[in-house]
Image (cartoon, rainbow, N blue to C red):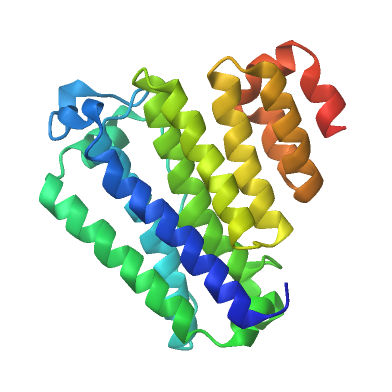
Length: 244
């Protein structure tokens, strides 16, 4: 997609979808755990720490956009160990009201930044060496849509709501189609659905969905090779046919 106006519409729609799911997460039955550090853990995240984590990732992307707009180079952000008890405890210690305010503010800041960016910044990765050839628009979608929806779906899967997880990701695919999102972004939506289906025990459906994901976004082959959500497909030999 080389139409920057249409691309901004896609980004806005996908980020808005993820933001709405974050708001709904806190009304889900299992979200009663919020504020209780002992209610969750690094292998079964509670709602508030999950939202805090999603917000941090969106904030990092917002800082990158802010740096571009101010003519600066953004800082390097390190990886976050999702399995670390210390990392989880830090997120879980935060107050619900603070986390909600931060996530709403960060989403707004990121959307405002997208509107302010030049077309060239969105579409031409060579303008900023620190992007290392990656498309800025796709990086925004990764951190503002794909990453948060994946974590929210995982939350539902680990809190006994597999149907809701699959429905969420199916809705994400439908939203990407409605917005006529570029293939790489639509492929990410399909990939999220495949992961939810696989964990929910829908191996055959997951294989079909993952095939569509990799066809749209071949870079997802590398993710599929190591993703724990797809272990069942790997063990059943289905993944070799899909990603090779």
